[in-house]
Structure formats: structure tokens, C-alpha cells
Amino acid sequence: MAGPDILTMSLLPFHLVTLSHPDWEAALACAKRLPGDALPELRLDLFPEADPEALVDALKRRCLVSCRRASEGGRWPDDDEAGRLAHLLRAVKGRPAWMDLEWELPVPPELQAARTHVRLLRSVHVAPGVFDLDQRLKHLPEGEAFKWVGWAGRLGDNGRLRPALGWARDHGMALSAFLMGPKGIPSRAMQAAWGGSFTYAAPDDGPAAAPGQLPLATLRAWRSARLHPGHGLCGVIGDPVLHSLGPAFHNARFQQAFKDLLYVPLVCGEAEEAVEALDALGLLGLSITAPLKLALPEALGLEGPLNTLWRRAPGEAWQGTNTDAEAFGQALSYLNPGPVLLLGGGGVARTSRAVLEAAGRSVLQVSRRTPADSATVAAFAPVGVVQATSLGMAAGDPSPFPELLAATLPSARWAVEWIYKEDTAFARWAQEAALKLVGGASLFEAQAGGQSRRFIAGCGGAIDS
Image (cartoon, rainbow, N blue to C red; front, side):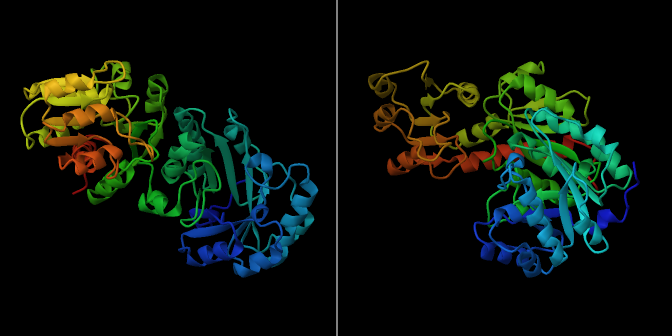
């Protein structure tokens, strides 16, 4: 293959921000606000009625111009390829800094004539299940930068890109290779660490242009452009996890400790898939959430439920603990003694029961599998109520077992909410009943703090002094 210009890696900013706004005025305003490490991607298929040359001129040439087919996640009809190319080439007259041309296409004469001042990015979007990056790198088309996009069907698929990205870095090639979909987030976030030269971001004031695309502010907060090959990967694993507070919490603490770790959401609901991903991604630290708190530790030969796993390096033995138990035990020590009504039957409920019983509390546990009636709850006379179901995760979720909650009010003095949100139906019920409430946010802070301390001390190399 022809050797790429090693200077290209410094000519293309790391962040390419797709102008996905519903109108051009908002897109242009966003482009003008972008920092120097971000280049706007002008997707002509998103503004099909506008004059391409005029759009490039409005951006003062500082842009990457593309026109995406519908089959590749764009809006230009697949059956109008001639019209798409003609529309794309109209932008050449505006002399944009970069043009995106599909990998398989020959360079049109109009674009070839502009190659003295327009750089060329060659891109390909492959079908789900296709991983042909290694073969494509053996036969590169003409261009200064290259983009390969696949689809993450399994979390471990991200790891299949690492060897090719590392090869590109070692050979000075400007390559970005990542996977779309929520399971592909690690490939976007770890792009620089694995050897990629650039990645795509959503505008902070606009929608994502592709599944799994992260906002520019998120990538910059994670310092994704500064990651190096020595950075280790941690994350919260389960499903759902995209709403998690973990990345903001842990990444800030890793940065404060000068620890070369990145923490991202890892979407996975099956233990077998999770185990596969541990080695494929070289994961070092995990916050485990539903539905894996029992299944994943057991698949690794550990006794669950656990919510925290860590190891020094890939291939070493995992260590595990349950910081949920630590956080709940700490909170419980400040709450009135007496019997407790425990709602839920999953891993968090199991952890809660173990803590309650270790503290000598009588427990009445209620779930869909083990129901109870209001008379039983009233006779039990709980002093506290622990909400350990999943209700409250989604907006509009009701309180669990409302008739049982009503039965607790003659005796209840406090309530614990495990959902990490301030405004759940259960939290509102507790506040209206004038109960002392231990909210999910405070439990999150306590348990996540225990996780961060273990990740910082136990994952990767020693902390820089």
C-alpha cells in the first residue's frame, strides 16, 4: 500500500462534529462556536435544498463535506447516486478543507483537480457482522485520511478494531475505525488510546447523527483526544446503563488522581457476552448493575451479588466487592432501629436483606414472586421501608406496591430509595409522609466513592506522584 503522509495526523482535528441540526442557522451558529480541536462535518444530505458552495463559504472553508447515502445512515436516496455525487462535487467550488468520498469510488476529475487545496477522507460503512478492516488496509484508495464504520452486535466486537488501529498509529496513518450502536461506545471513546487519529461527535445543541454517537462535551470531558496506549478501560456494565451517573463521577476522580483510566457505559445484558468482552476490551474495572450483579460474578467463579470488580491488568485474577452493601450499611447505622419492609427480589434486594439481617433487623421481603397483603404489613409494623425494585428508572414509573406503602404509615419513620434519581414516585411518597429519606443520590455517592477508590488503587499502574 502507498505510505500515508505522516503529517496528515496533525492536519485533521481529533473531533469531527456532525452538524445535525434541524435548520442551517442553528448548524452555522454551532460551527462558529466549535473549539480549535473540532471540525464541523457538513452533511449535505441533511441540507439538500441549500447550495453546497454557499454552505462551505458560510463555514469559511473550515469543514469536512460529506453526503451520506440512506443505506449508510444518511438521507440521500440510494437510487440517486448520480445526483448525490453531483451535489457533493458542487461543494468543491467552495474549496472546503476536507471532502469525504466513499472508499470504493474513483476520484472524480473535478475533485482531482482541486487536490492541491482540498484534502480527501475516504470512508466506508459496512453491513452488520462485517469486519473487513484488515483487508481494506492492504488496498487503500487515494486519500489523506480513512474512516471505517461497522456495527457492534456484541460488546466484545469493539476489541476487534484494536489491532488495525494500533497498526495505523505505528505507520502514521490517519485512521478512524469505530462501531455504531450503543454497544459501540467503547470504540468511539477509546479511539485515541487504541491508535485512531480522529472520531465523530454529536453537537452539544443537536441530535446524534448516528446510533452511539457521543456529544462533543462528553468526549472532551472524558479527555478522549488525550488518551494514549497506556490508558485502561473501566465502565458500568448492564442494561440499561446509558443513563448512568458513573462516567461523570469516576472520570473526574481518575483525572484528579492522574490515573490513566477511562470509564464508559458498557451496554450488555448477558453474562456470557460480558465475560467475552472482559478480555476482548482488556477491561480493568467494572461497576456491575442489573441484570448482571449475580450472573456475572458467578460466571467468573465469584460469589455474588457483587457490584464492583477490578484487576491490575488483563489476564490477572479479578477481585470483587459490594459497595452497595457498604453504602447501605453506613446509611442504616443512622436510621431508627426496628423491623424493615423490603420491596424487591433482585440483586439489590438480596444485598439489602443481607445488610439488614447482619444488623439484627427483622425483615419482611415482598416482591412479585413473594407477595404479601396489607394486613400482614400492618401487623409487621415496619419502622423503615427499603425500595429495591426497578420502578423509578423510567419517567412516569409509579411507586411499588402502593397499598403496602399505605399500610406502613402508622409505624414507618424512614425510607430508603435505591433508584439513583432525586424525583421518583417512591421518594415523593416518603416526603409527603414526612419520613426521613435516604435518597438514591446519596447512596450512589457513597457506593461509587468506594468503587473509585478501588479502581484507582487496583487498576493499571501505580498512581503518579
